[in-house]
Image: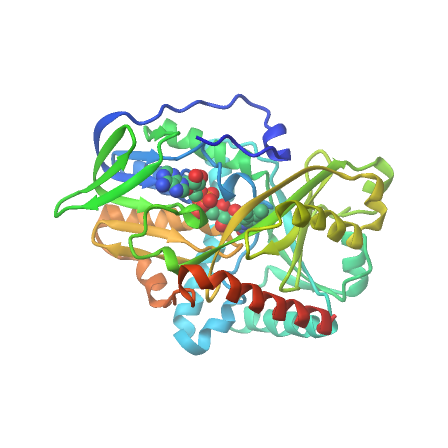
Length: 429
Ligand SMILES: Cc1cc2nc3c(=O)[nH]c(=O)nc-3n(C[C@H](O)[C@H](O)[C@H](O)COP(=O)(O)OP(=O)(O)OC[C@H]3O[C@@H](n4cnc5c(N)ncnc54)[C@H](O)[C@@H]3O)c2cc1C
């Protein structure tokens, strides 16, 4: 079993970690969930609320994967701009997906209230334009939101307003989602695990699933020391899915992303750096995203690698990127550096569905998982409970291609695509 990576999130927990047992012997349940991140925990909470007997198996620790390592940024939208899906799937699908993404954002606040989760939640999510042409895209986006989606909770910020809110004049304008925000992801995930336990979910850590075997009336789920016979299973392993395939593995690509946390910034700098306390994400393909923690550290992410190599170099690169945006942080240096796998799909829309009658799955949140994982769990639990597709049908309308080139060649191909996209960032800047 692997322990949590050394991160600011781990060191800032104000609680003791629960040691969940490892699975031994044979068990039976209605729903066996594989993966103890946001998706698995959300599915467990919702299914258990409906009276299903639920067992959750995590290979390492709860929220050991992306859920305990991410930027904590919460925003609506489901893809690279939901409007981009209209041409292919029609307005009704777009509207459904948009509403689901709004529900996903609201669900976080509902859970924080319902289960009294202390996770440093703040409001305001700002997209910051790295070129004038990106401001034009914001304008057409907001026009689409208001005229077609009837959504009025976001607004354009001028160059000066962004400069004041963020503390840098490098952006050309912004799109502020007032309902969005940010939180401490590991605190939130552990709070969800507490909630699941209170609802009688059986949680096992250090319980890596090595094989699944679907029979007519149940699925057998094997770990090295135990077995679960479940009426249904939910695969919630996202970019950490390895041994098990179930026909879904090629739909997503793991890319590695790095985060740093500085020391708490000085009182003087706090007046100018992110006085708004929004979280910020820029519009580059190779993007920077950042926010302040509750103790005023800069939590900064950026620097994607498709090759899963050169980790030390890329981690340092994240610090350089932060200093480019905030040169005044040169004395605040990174105190923590950690990385994790983000699962992306070809079209950057999550892949949520059923790979067979008894096997459900959700993955490929493509950088929008803090909010969307919650609703994905709810959708799966509803479908398992009712035996009907329900909202799952909307997601199954979105067709997901396999990453081209097969397992061996898709990474080099993506490195090339990513390099070309980065050039577009440079020329558009
Ligand atoms: C550095 C970084 C920054 C990010 N920033 C943001 C952000 O700011 N906003 C946002 O919306 N999204 C962000 N994301 C994405 C977001 O974190 C994910 O979409 C989300 O956490 C996915 O949750 P999950 O539960 O599906 O997967 P995970 O949290 O990755 O959980 C999957 C779990 O499955 C377990 N597992 C795998 N295989 C097995 C097995 N065989 N048996 C048992 N268990 C298994 C793993 O150990 C893991 O714990 C970021 C991701 C990273 C890595």
